[in-house]
Length: 347
Image (cartoon, rainbow, N blue to C red; front, side, top):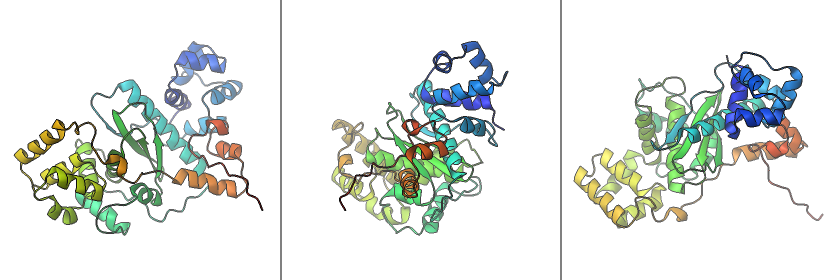
């Protein structure tokens, strides 16, 4: 069971503020806040009414997040580089946990009827590539490249949130809350990397919902490779790889040239020496860090959270009412369920 102190701590970390800053904003001493966060003392009702808006949430949200079954501050599945700063990814992890709770809070009021669902598998019993093939079959996806990947994921009830992480060293995070999966992706990444990240995080959601393994990252990567580039279809196209051929395949499959090289190598279509030579060719042109064609790929833009919000607006709810239902203190703090501004029309 989560605690109120855990909820306060997670909300504060998500904002990237210190105990001292929150204490000042809420009109309490830092010593008192420390006791609240460590569950050594429970804040009085009048203190909660100051703490909640300082954190951008409602009192019911804080209390609900503090009593959720299981931990609120769970470790997120995360696609990050080894050089990513701990302070940065810990804040992103806290933001994901807050979004999970906001989704849960809203779904207590609104039912989401998804066309599909994100299935889960035992990673010990099910190979990652087999799991990817089964998901594609269950979702009745066309054979070949995945068009509009995020739309497929959202159609299965997964809320995808795109934000600028302020770093290029973390690509994405994911986790379940009750029956609702949530993925966060980095807006700063090029489209081909975003697609691979979404596939990677989908792999985590399918394979590691409850069973964690020592090879989780490798499994999620193998899932993404098969999901985005099915062996049966892409294998014949990977023979005789050249830079020109990699350009064509990137346009067709929507994945990076480096991911295509890795796919060819993993499927044993190219040798280790050929792989090395291709990477050298990319490096000589400066394409290891910034590949060409990425800007030409169709954008991957989340829409589910906005669609939910607009449906609620159409039912007559105000933006402040939607924010409150999702646990935000007011509409200005609601960064998740945001609808487009409706323009007045002449009638």
